[in-house]
Length: 182
Image 1 (cartoon, one colour):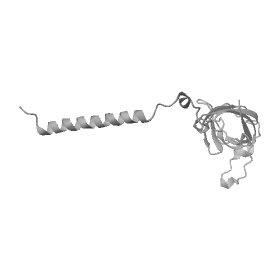
Image 2: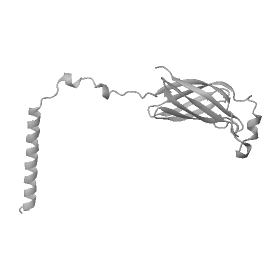
Image 3: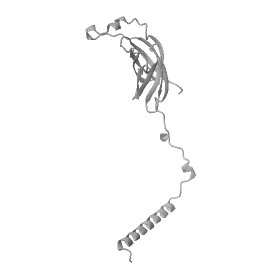
Image 4: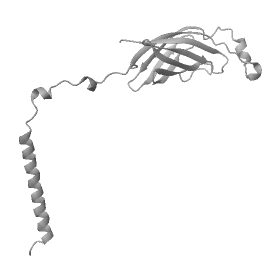
């Protein structure tokens, strides 16, 4: 029995293709010698070296909470509790510590007259936006709020604004965070 013509033609084509590829590979290997050892050990360029973002690392700072004056008419929603706030709670100095990862995600904590707070947030451009929340299981009247801090002269400077859970106490403070260890 004779092999079919198309089978023979297919085998012949494959043989020619294999020979052509083999010849080209030999020509290529003879035309370009392997790179020298010095070329292989060349240092990476400065642009190839990974650089930390300006915000990466640990930042620490302080705040000094004070009463937030509220200028609002009673018929516009002013709470009577705001007038009764004697400033005896949530006033004074505290600390904030945050850690910012390479993706700009912020985690941390705060403690002081506003209580223990869990800090979370993100870097947005040259600003760091923080959310301060009481830990799980805290009193309903625990403070919570925000900080928006802008990068300025190597620090993060901004305003902390918080209120008690029932909004009867409202506080504010200037915040400045400085990078630690570098």
